[in-house]
Structures are given as C-alpha cells and as structure tokens.
Image 1 (cartoon, chains in turn red, green, brown, yellow):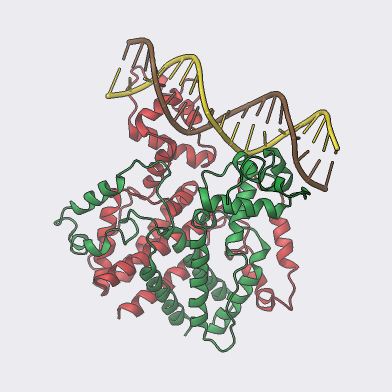
Image 2: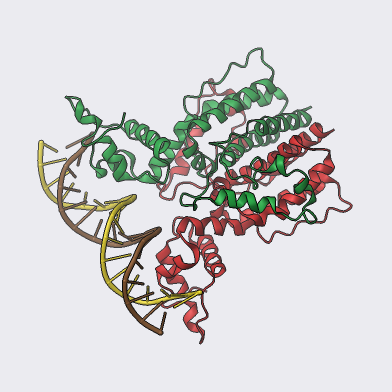
Length: 236
Length: 236
DNA sequence: ACCTGAACACCGTTCAAGT
DNA sequence: ACCTGAACACCGTTCAAGT
C-alpha cells in the first residue's frame, strides 16, 4: 500500500503530468496517515515520486496546500433531500453527516476550525442550510445569526472534540492527569467530586483521550438537541 | 518597548535566572505581537537576551511551550459571583468573559480550539460551571452533556470566529472572493442571493475578514441566546 | 541549577536550467 | 507547461562544556 523509491508515478509507462488535484489528494492521504505535523513538502514529493520543488508549480506554497486539503473534508458531502422532512430533522441529519466527515479526517479538523476557508465550493451547502433555516422561520439578520449559530456550533464543537495532545507529550501524562483529577479536594470542588466518574475522560477540560480514540457521541447528540431546541424556541 | 541586542535581561545588574513562567509569558507576548507562525525558539531567545538552547531547560520543547502559552489565555479569568444571580444570566456573563479573553489573544485561539489542553488550572472553572448547571436542573450524564454543550459551543464558536486566512494568501483575494459571491447564480442560489447583503462578510463560509478585525458581536449574542434557550428547554 | 556554544539533521522556498 | 537540481536562509533539538 505504500510507495517507495521513485513512487507510484514511475510504475506507469507514461508519466502523465501532475495536476493540482493530484497534489491535494496526495496531501489529504498523507495527513490522514501520518498527521499534519509530518506533512513536509519533501516527504510528500518523495511519496509522489517527484522532486519537492515540482509541487510548488501546482500549489504555490505549503499553507495553501494545507487549506486546500482541509477544504476537501466537507467536499463531496451529499446532503439529504429537504422535501417532506421537517427542518429540525434535516438539520440533525446534516450535522451528523458533517461530524462523520470530520471524523474521517481528524488530522485536518484543527485546520478547518482555525483557518478562514475561502472557497466557493461551500456555496451550495450555504444555500441549502439557509433555505432550511428560512423554512424554520428566520429572516434577514436573524437568518444570518441562526446560520452562524449552526455552523459555529457544528464546526467548532467537533473541532474541539477532535483536538489532540501535543505531538511530543511525554508518555504517561494521561495517568498523571487522571491521578491529579482523582485527588482533587472534595471540599473546594464538591460538585466535580460528586460527578467525577461521569466527568473523567468524558468532559472537555477533564479528559485525556481524543475524540479520535474516544468519540463523544452521546454528548454530541445532546449538544445538537440543545441547539435545535434553542433554534425552535427563538423561531417560534 | 522592544528589546534589542542582549535583551532586557542585560539591563539589570543581576542576571536573575530565567523561570518557566518568564519564558511562557514572553511567548504569549511574542505571539500576540508577531503571530503564531513567527514564533521561533531562536527569535524568542533573542527577544529574551538568551541563547536559544537555554529555553529548552525550562520548557522542554516548542509544542509544550505553545500549549503552555495557550493555557494562559483563560487563566486569571475572574468569574462573577453566583449568589443571587440566575443560572442563565451567570452563564451569559461567563461566556462573554471567555470570548473577551480569547479576543485579547486571537493568535492563540487556534491552539485553544485544537489542542487537547491538559491542565489542572481549569478545575476551578469546571467546578463553578458544573455547580451552575446543576442549579439549572442537570445531573449525572445530563450534567456532563450540558457542560460539554456549553464549553464546546463557547471555545468552538469563538475559535471559528477568530480564524484567520493562511499567512501567505495573495493580496486581493478578498475582493476576488467578494466578487465571486456577488456573481452567484440567483436561480440556483435564490435564498443566498436574496440575503446577500446580510450574509456577505458576516457569515461563516461567506466572509473574508477575521473576527479579529470584524468581531461578530451580534451573531455571538444570538448564538449564546440559542444555547441558553436550548438548555432551558432541556432542563425544564 | 542554569546557561553557552557548536553541531546535526532537517525545513520551505527561489531560481536558473532543462525538456 | 511542467519538472529537475542546486542553492539559500532558515528551522528545532541534542549535547558537551562551562559557571
């Protein structure tokens, strides 16, 4: 499954020219497999059987390659039909689809959550979402605000879920943190102490496993329910 | 205000030893001023009037330094008193405080949103938040879920708000993107077209200015309202 | 304990040159 | 148009040596 030496390209008789899409695709695969920090122009070039500097002709720079790769995550997302389905149901389905797509590329989530994406490929998605929110009863500024509430919640929450420890965290810090949590003073932190088994490794700021390894399914469904209830209350 | 040559330390007669906190503080200031990408062990060392390798004795590695710096953002946040104030009011106040703190360090927001923070300094914050949510009527798993809904919304939404374009984006891409938006087909994208003036540069996926330069105050208040309404509906 | 100074193994990117 | 190959100006980090 892995390429070596001159790379996959050399295997084919004709060495068809690289395209921009080829490079971005390869970058997505490389990041999925080795992580964002491991992505190097030189490493990616080797993987593609090409000189590092050849990539620049297609993608301009490494930051531009990374945002192009992150834009791929929500690309090709096929949204469910709207006809005959209530707006809140549709919203829930789309939210789960987006989250699933992000979970498929967890190493790209930090980019999606922190880089201002500027791609017109998202426009069909925006249109669908707007039309559904309009159907829910929002218009003008309130339409914009509810749109931002949905997108901000969706991308933001899942980005946080998928956040990972720093690359070089020393071995065993998880057990150390777990121990620190367990020894918290019950007098100064009574509520936390009382709910420690429910909280430990299940709540933001009190967990040590990533959402990659330990998906927060139940909490996501609950947060989604909060969002939809809030929208319903505001629209009604 | 800026140091040069041997740095600030040399000015004092005694060259008191560096502390870990000194390095982290300097890193926060450096990132605030020059951006996350500009942070370099070598540059920071020069700023502090010290050899690059001296920093390693205190902070271990650059990733560890960066997460330590990001943890500083919500440190020293003084939460309002709970006594005599309704849970939803308190939640709103805290949310605005957190957002304000993140806006004070926008270059650190991407780290807060995407790095799994593992610091016990957040525990007092967790306790306060839990006790307020308990007062709102949540317990056990539902307490954990509502906590995650709040934190995920708060950190996630603001991280997305503060997201910035890639460092090397070519000049004038904003106007290009604005033009692309304006020329969208009204037949295939009727809702977007109808709401274009309200959406353009105001909605996620359809803006070109960062929340740094163009804070999304109104949308944040609306999203916060959605969150609180949703929690109220679920708790009641 | 804390810092210097040299050294290692990398980076991203530019640019002239090839085809 | 697309890629090679060399070269430049950096990086983070290790480690022996100093005090």
